[in-house]
Image 1 (cartoon, rainbow, N blue to C red):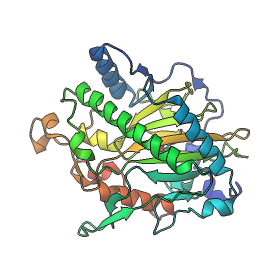
Image 2 (image 1 turned 30 degrees about the vertical axis):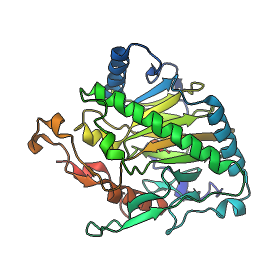
Image 3 (image 1 turned 135 degrees about the vertical axis):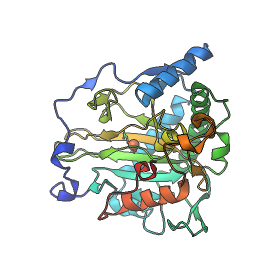
Image 4 (image 1 turned 180 degrees about the horizontal axis):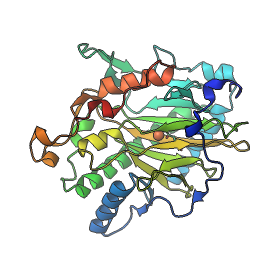
Length: 344
Ligand SMILES: O=C(O)CCC(=O)C(=O)O
Ligand SMILES: [Fe+2]
């Protein structure tokens, strides 16, 4: 990792973490996906989406052995030498793989990551130019070590897609839509998995593992270890609350695309990651994303069949995602693209 003395890591004063913040004992809602009462399950999901935009799920059906294998592979990978890790490094031409220079809102994050997509290859927008209809093929880069990395990562991704689509059915029902309503948006989905490693940070009061942000996609399913550090901005009062790790649970949060589809009924929520000076932390988010050619816009049946009621103008997912990826990769002069740019 780089030295903390590099001011690229320093957060603006008002963004710096509050070291006295306690991890909230109750925190975000806990939802049991094995609940036999479907109506109650749908109701609880709807409530969690409206009130928090964040919830935890247990009894989700993902084999814990697989999650442990992936966690182990991730540890082994990040403990390779920098030379080894850089063999699968992301650059301007290769958008997937390893990198340690991500910026959130133009401040460098105290972390290193490994990104891969689910579909091989993943079809994506070739450029951010609205008039360019060329399609790019994103290919994963796999390290030689640990040898099981590719297989475990691919198996995990399949589980995540199945779980993500199941959550989308429950979310659709909680909005009064038919369970399959969202299926059409995912034919060539651009979903990805990210392995995050947050090394111990000598000045945790100045830097953040990930600066505050909202996830741009549809929803995120996050596995975190037992260290803690994820904070959510509470919708009710704007305060940051720590999300206490629950063994074998996933944290689910809604992204910007769902906010637009629901015409603002379900909001994506600001979150960030604080780091600490003693322990390293690992997390694994899965980002469920639509096909690149999807125009994201409020669902007609939720706006009374009339564009007049739409709070957002349509935007192309592929162009949006690519422009966000580019801005995360380097420090730009301006803030990166956000959905409020498409607000009516
Ligand atoms: O590491 C975490 O707990 C969250 C990471 C995150 O928010 C992200 O990668 O988008
Ligand atoms: Fe996030």
